[in-house]
Length: 442
Image (cartoon, rainbow, N blue to C red; front, side):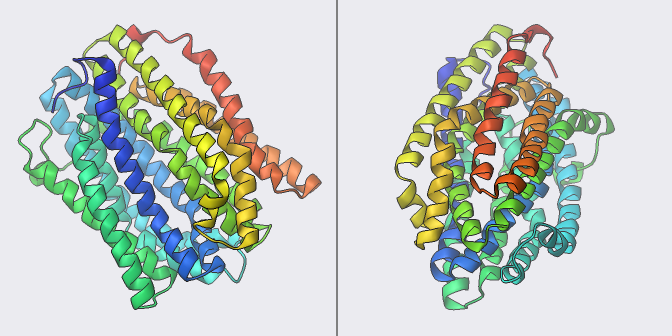
């Protein structure tokens, strides 16, 4: 796989990001299919059950994904520097870590789902379906975790093409199984969760096959899967702040979801439908963020400091422009987009209100995530953790704790997001002006 340390910067980043963008599109479709089919075939209560589960799922997987991102930084740095022994140890340590984490996540998710949903004030008429969906989903955690671990390794060495192929295959499988389980066998929301689990396991196996069969320096060999203490420590030093950041921000979003739940199942369904739409708006942010982290990691590993600075600037600008264009589209076509999930008038109204509050501020969301991606690629994971936790967790929860009891207005929940995006972006901008690339190495 050709490294990102040579050739035109824009070409390397765009060619790497485009398969990621397509992959993220299919990933979002993969995640959205459940809601589309559930909302249209099983009704608003079932859609509310699936939607209310999203924040909890993200809270648990966000922690593991953050740690995996630390592994990606170490792997991309070793690959960029041409350090094969370190690369091999990092790959096999990462896989070992994923196996253990997947098993732990399965136990936590299955056992604690009912209690957390109760704590989130999930309405009683929604609770049974929410519990069923979550417990089946988390029973397949190992497949999801290992898929993300394998994809992280491939992307860290610059391979964004194979993950795209596998994601397309698993998305098609998920769609077919959703229809079969829900329409043919009438399994309800549990069938949607089971379809997702099976698809995740298949995608993980396809990624494993690619890593196991490749002849490149990052080849995965079963007999070499074990922990290397020194590299595990480095991975955790870089990844743990990102994991803590993701999980605590997701915890704050669980608090936000509990505020939404208090407005009833129509609000839950409308907010959940918008969240799926916003997921698509996040695609260019996510794809260029991955490209940025890999680009920065590889080029700093190769000590290409000026190239690193130029690439970071290009990636940040591209992400903001694409995100804002999508934000305008979401703002204009919100009624049609929300109605695709649930055409109930009240559900559509809640979804439109949220969309037209947040969509035009996607550029701020993009900027914060882009700077965070650059900093993680440079091994400075603690900085984005502190900034995002401060504004996206502490400020959000505090703001809602004060305003909701006073106003009893769902608009407060809608506005807390663009407000905290703006505050974090300003803080990131101030910090970013002071970066010394020559002293930013993992």
